Image 1 (cartoon, helix red, strand yellow):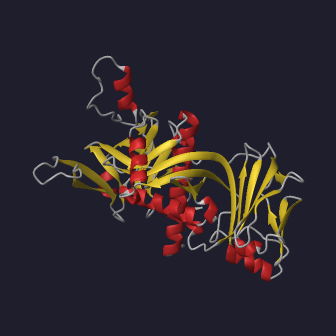
Image 2 (tube, one colour):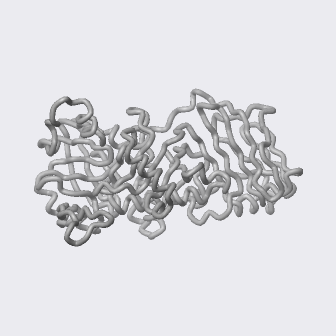
Image 3 (cartoon, one colour):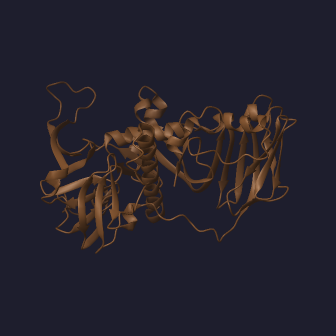
Length: 419
């Protein structure tokens, strides 16, 4: 969803389909439904027929999906409120799954890759061929060593660094050896980080730590940091990786040179960030059975708490103005809205999340965050500060475009990320 839902207005129709459960939920906005007594939904061939006092809408289902006859049940219907319908669905098992967008899973040895600044398209590292592509231990590995070793941690204060022609994969970054060409495309700046806690005074605050930030020389976008003078740490949200033929192996393709409008660049960035993050969450949940994540800045401060609920969801959404326009024009069918309005029938991750910065002063939210911080099953996922802000914007935009009754679940907000 992401950028496509910006300025969406009120929700007209929202459809959520669960592939594993073979079930669906249809929500009609109050303006679209009109009088509950006059609203009715029936199953047609590869579509849902929505009968209202204002007219008939035909909602096309994704290919391979059909609604079981006589399974539609209205579960709510108060005047002036949304209408909810539950249903059973059948999904063709021969439908091909979408290709993996996760760049971490697609890097191979003895292949030629280039690393490009996602913001401006400048080639940062060219013609890299790796003899080894190795995953780093996951984010909690130090805690696990402490729990399982009966002697002091032998890896304490030791950094795992790449050798020449290595690519080491963190959960959200690449560790790469630098070369002479980096001086022509990258800039470095030393920043001081102060670990200052609430209540600290000027005399008691902890000493500063230094961090060497790496930026694109062309557009000054932050890309990562220099772990050592010879090692680069590049975040997957800031760089695109392409093969020798120029084909991107992760995320979404950057806007071409001829489409240099600000809106196009923003849409391209949002799509890339959304798919990159969704692919990482999906891979980590599938391979390591991790479902709770703490999106952190490089100084290990939690920015967002994420709880991955479902990864088998198809979502179709249309704003009220689009739906009503079709009704007023007496259009025979409601086609999926254009990309500027929604991402129709998109595979998506369903998430619960908490904005840590907005929790200040809310005791229940602060207790929730503290509980997550103490739980070893919560997986840290490190991203640059700017990317954390962008991810939060993606999530809140998605939330605002859901029917009001579906925007919250207890203490959490609900959002979807396209896969």
